[in-house]
Length: 159
Image 1 (cartoon, one colour):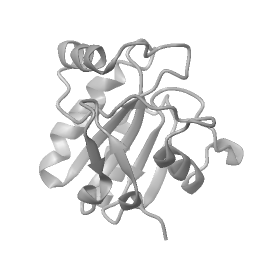
Image 2 (tube, rainbow, N blue to C red):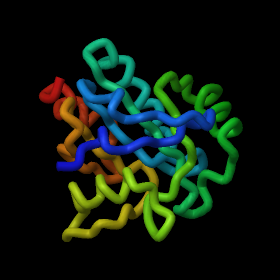
Image 3 (cartoon, rainbow, N blue to C red):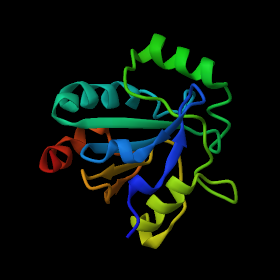
């Protein structure tokens, strides 16, 4: 059975991150954008990270420019924006596609594990979130309008 441990992703610094290293942690994987109406969710994501990081929780943010050209910057510009405007301390990954032929294999797998409304595999917009348990399984998918604070109870159950 496939788990998140079967994937390697690029960080925003260009390093490779073997997600096997994340087994034993509860993860929230999010496709993000700097110029989106949902961008203020970075505050809520950082708050979740701060509240639960000592219990084994992490947020993995994957910038994506597939929705309305809302993440046009390069890795350095994205990191600077997130640090200056939101004080982010959780890991930023390299920019990815989440839909289409060039979609990240990680996102293809998560979409298959937890399809969206009416069984749709496509991600509809920025700030779609996937909750991953300590064993690396996708537990739940949240839409862009789901505020991070509403996910806290689900995170607590897994911690």
